[in-house]
Length: 178
Image (tube, rainbow, N blue to C red):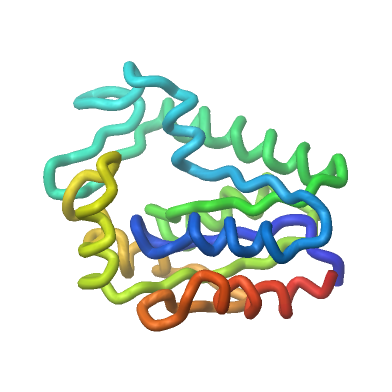
């Protein structure tokens, strides 16, 4: 099976971005890495905040409202269009709705060949990483560490607690069957 899309799902600071970069370095042709952080950035600062499109609470919780879901749907359709054009896409995601989030993305990706990857990390380690990231609300890593995996089905799972990003990328590459 040829892979068109790799979806890396994990909590904040689990190591998804590092795995994506490592995977890009291993692939023979260019692949784009895009994810939920790009969507949030694209929505602009007016979209974040209390009662807005997406709200980040002081304890690390995230509330994505209906306006966010509409933008997310358009985003997912765009990612699918990129992959259908022949450019590989690595999607860096945090499925806050668990299996329901996976279903929404899977529906948008339709007939594309997708490799679903669960990226796990010990909550203590992820929380430590979070402290060095200025764009993260303290508590996101701990809050999301198991939440994003509830009801999600994977083709392969990796754990960055004791495994380097490049080792995880090699495991994923082996499953991509390029």
